[in-house]
Image 1 (cartoon, rainbow, N blue to C red):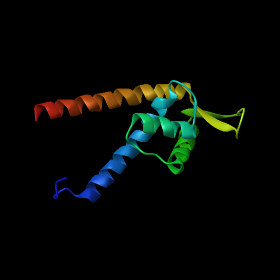
Image 2 (cartoon, helix red, strand yellow):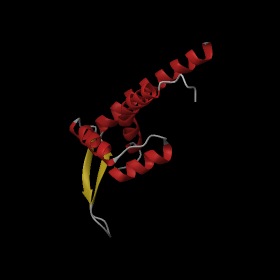
Image 3 (cartoon, rainbow, N blue to C red):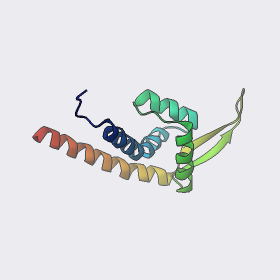
Length: 117
């Protein structure tokens, strides 16, 4: 890596970028099926290079629930403890559509900039 790279700046930038994407990614993951928290963490690890801790995902899920973008429901398991499943609401689906349009627009703009420079 280039010695002139300010690693603190890059780490801070990555953290801010990640924070902005986490809600979108969680909502994307919930669009196809209800999931419990650890399942969301596993899916995120499978599809992205973003690492998320339980201490981050549960407050985020609670905020999404408070904003009525997701609901939660406890489910008994055949073995083990009950799990809290989170499901996207109709309002969450509507928000996802707007978020996706914005992300797609940003990605297109970034691609245009990269191709023109």
